[in-house]
Length: 290
Image (cartoon, rainbow, N blue to C red; front, side, top):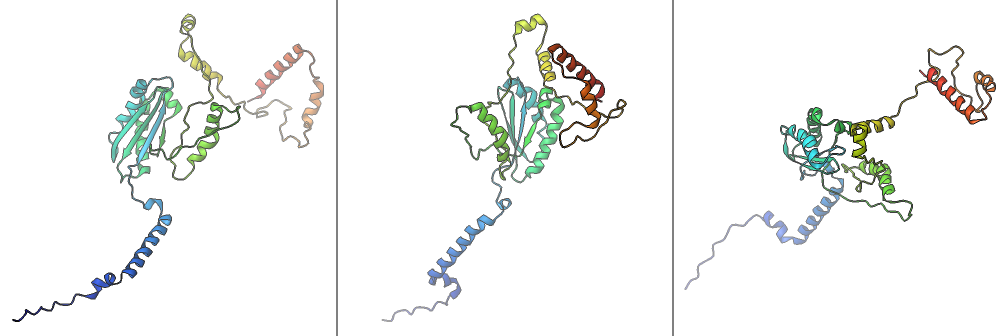
């Protein structure tokens, strides 16, 4: 009985089995490639990472004294009407609060440049600006290149009982919030709590009806008292004869043109004389200030 002879199979190339026959060498090369990739992550620019989340633009506006429904009808609706034709627009969401604030988040396609999208949104807001209330235009409409996701939270505390929550909130807005916004990678920083230093004016409708005063009249009166008026310049041409202008001496002494006149006016001693002196000084300033 004869056994069948095995046919000789052609030899396969040795290159395909090079790393199979040398597992240690293959493992070392794999470890080196992995370490090089880990080291390259720290040197890779942020712009090289793939864009996963869609770029978002936030539009923030404040309508003082309005309810959430009023903000939605008078502020959010005119702006949303101008957003329908933006390039690469995916969707937008608006949140209107009862304190008169509106937060409109606009999301674009991942391939859309965020800077160009912010310019398009700004142009849309400018088109809707004539339809917005005057109070909203006066406070301004903010456009931010930031997502709504919260990256972190910072808590400010104090063991001193003199510094209450309102003081810490004001300190956070003045000294900490702007510094956080300047950190690379942070689009916006917001202080929660809303405990800001302000003046609350409560109006009595019955007394307002008796006096014939409206809310606009009260607001205009407060606005006039809160205005800052420049005083102008002293000694500006045309000036009265004998008026001299120039830098004051460093030693604190009066100029030569004023030393003679100061001796001619003795200091008032009685309240009536002091009041008369102040009135004459105010009158002279009124005519000399140009």
